[in-house]
Length: 266
Length: 332
Image (cartoon, rainbow over all chains, first blue to last red; front, top):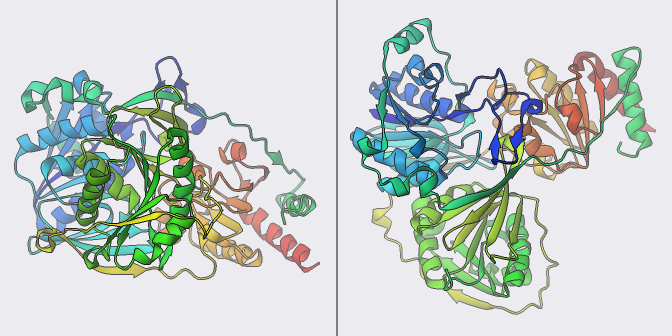
């Protein structure tokens, strides 16, 4: 199976909310001090989905990342997990796009890669939480798409996907080639092994610029946006917590229950 | 852009009835249509759904487009995108809104790209910009840490709306409206997917989304055993048990209990968060709770910025004593 996984470098979503800050003048998030970026968690699970298939059926996994200031330690994580090849669309012209213009660049890169059976994406990136790039790539490449997969199994040139629904899941069979987005219900992504990390260190990513993948500059990144960002802001937090204290945790617990009864919550 | 007119709502059907989300969308759509001075329509797509057209009118639609076809019995991206493409090209609405549901989050983006336009997903506010007269969507981003407002450059302007944010109109069975039937026109042989099976995970007791009380556990519980205690407390309070994503990912509780940005959105009267840090992604699922109570041993945990009442302490000591006291109080 030839598989492609789109992986995005993002600000660590696990960074404490207190470190999150928006620069209102530029409509941009200020990267938190001392917290390195990571691969968006759902994208890691997309790599895991591909690795499970590679474990079962063999094959090749190509990871693709788009952006600038891509830290090699970060974007090589799919390699250290077991992916075979890494392609970087590293150029400012690719950045500041919306789902559409970003997907267009990724789709053109995938066209250049050429051979694939499955394209995996995370269900949504932990920064913009849009969950559209996968569908857009599928639309551009004319592929069937199945989203929010929790299990992906290959048999006889077809793929069986269990996808998450509001009250359980459904099993969808799809003809290849196809695009699948992956959700956390797939299970935790594997940790890189020492062997994997060493192998990744030796692998050089392939770096492509817009000219390498034949994209029209007006259709990628900021230039190609169909939606404009008008404002990015932090909602004002007004909450004030009444912390119940006592000499022991057990006493505090009792006081809490009494307080809730007092205010008619219990 | 000038030719597109009207607000269109994709009205989902659940168990033979108009879904709660559909009625919320109609309420939201009514305001948008009224600000534009244009018509509100609903699309009912599925199998055996035509009987619900009058219901959509009762909840605010001026016109209902019905696409009733056995091939639409199960949701599939390819068939529903094809049908909505046909409807959108025939009706040329200015705005199309979906629920941020299993269907909506899959259908809206692909439809937008099919139509050469764009979608904004999981919106918590939708308005008509008074100057530009275009749709102005607001959506949470960065896991809920921030909000973003966008502007469209193409029509139709597509958005999905978060559940339980908008309000339905009063149901008025005497409302009049027009019903238009549109043939699905699908080619079954061209469909590349097949739904083999649908599995409904049995939820014991009350559904999370309907529970008046939710007791949730997080990573700090350290394992599945803590959830047994939460279950006891939830049952006592006639509520349901929820969980943060890490607890589910660790297999301590089924995924169906996940409350959060990519899990369930709950709006109980009382939300008790036990050993749960209160990450933005989790808060996205429970911040609309009337009262949030936190039990966490870390005084710096974000949950204390979100909760109304809290105790800083080890849940292993706090929870049993709290549960016991609640038992006594309820017995009085």
